[in-house]
Image (tube, rainbow, N blue to C red):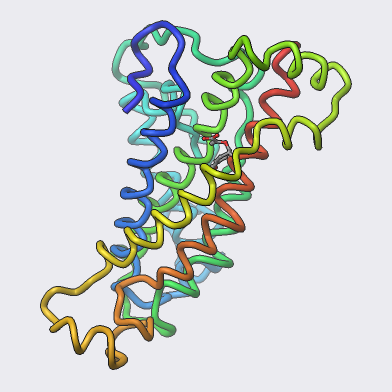
Length: 267
Ligand SMILES: C=C(O[C@@H]1C=C(C(=O)O)C=C[C@H]1O)C(=O)O
C-alpha cells in the first residue's frame, strides 16, 4: 500500500498494488450492502424529517454527519481522500506534513457527484433485494463504506497519472499532448488494455471466491437459486455486476480523473 506520508516518487507498481487491494475493499463493501433490501426511502429527499432542519435524503444527511466527524480527524487532508459533502469542520488534530505527491491544481479534482450517481442508479438496484426491510441505518452505513472505497479508488487515478507523467520515457510526449489539449491522445497514451483485462478477470475470480456462502453446500450454490439471494449463481453479489461496474464505470472514471489531472499538470 502506498504510504503517502513518505516523500519521493511512488512507483506505478506500488500504485497498482494499492488498486488491487482496493478491489478487495470494494467487493467486501458491496457484499455487506447486499444483505439489506434496497430501502429506496433513504435516497429520496424529505421523506425522513430532521430536527435540525436539514433538507435532503437520509443518506445525504448521514454522509454529512459522518464526514463532519471524519474531517475532525483530518481525513480530507490526506491527498487520497475526498468528501462527498461540503463538510467544513476543523480537525482537532494538528495538520500532517504530507509531501507533495500531486500537482497543486490537480488536488482540486473531485468526481464524487458522479460516483454517487453511479452508485445509486447502477449499483444499489443490482446488489440489493427490492423492497424495504426498515434497516435504514445499516444500509446507509454500508452505502457510505461503498462510496468511500469507490472514491478512494477512482481518485487514485491522480497518483497514477503523476507517475505516468514523470516517467522519463513518456514525459516529452505527455507535455506535447497536454500543450495541445489533446484529450483523446492523452487517454490513449495512458491506457493499458492488458492491465485492464487482467483486472476484470481477477475481479470476477475474487467475486466468486469472496462471494461464496460457505454455510451452503457447494452443489446447492451452483445448481439452484437461493430464494434469499439476489443472484442466480448463489454468490452474495453477482460477479457480472461487479465486472460491469469496473468495466463501464470505475475504470473509465479513473481514466477521466487521470486525463483531467494531466490536462492541468503544466498550469
Ligand atoms: C490505473 C491505470 O490506468 C488505466 C486505468 C486502469 C484502471 O482504472 O484500472 C488500468 C489501466 C490503465 O488503462 C494503470 O495503468 O494502472
